[in-house]
Length: 151
Image (cartoon, rainbow, N blue to C red; front, side, top):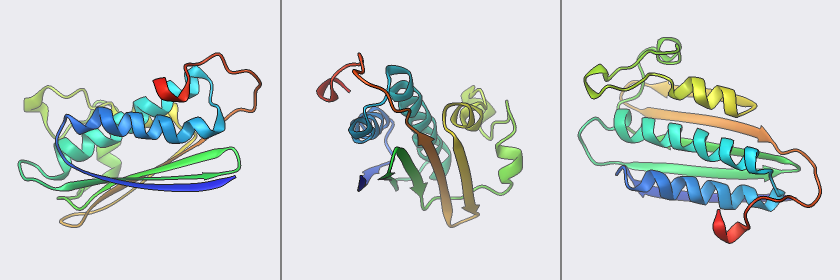
């Protein structure tokens, strides 16, 4: 099975939950376990929150969520055309935050890495950031998770 989605929204915090729901509904085609669905939603939430808070500083911009399913693997790319990240390695360090005044925990990338099978971050200052995440969905029967409509 192969499928793709493209979803774009304004960098308002109220859209973070919408992105979580879209990602979970898209991944539902693979019948993920409750745990897999939760991990996807959490990773998407972290990536989208980073784009909203850090990508555009105090300006309005668009955040994009692209999804792709190939076989039993779901891939998401969360991207923005905002200010970019000057030092990706530093930004990915646990507990590092570029916004300490907002009392951010600095665990966004760590959470994404722990919940997804692969994460790749690309960024150029002044050009934006993209976070590519992949997750292999386990093959199982009779998932007892909520229905696709409840995602």
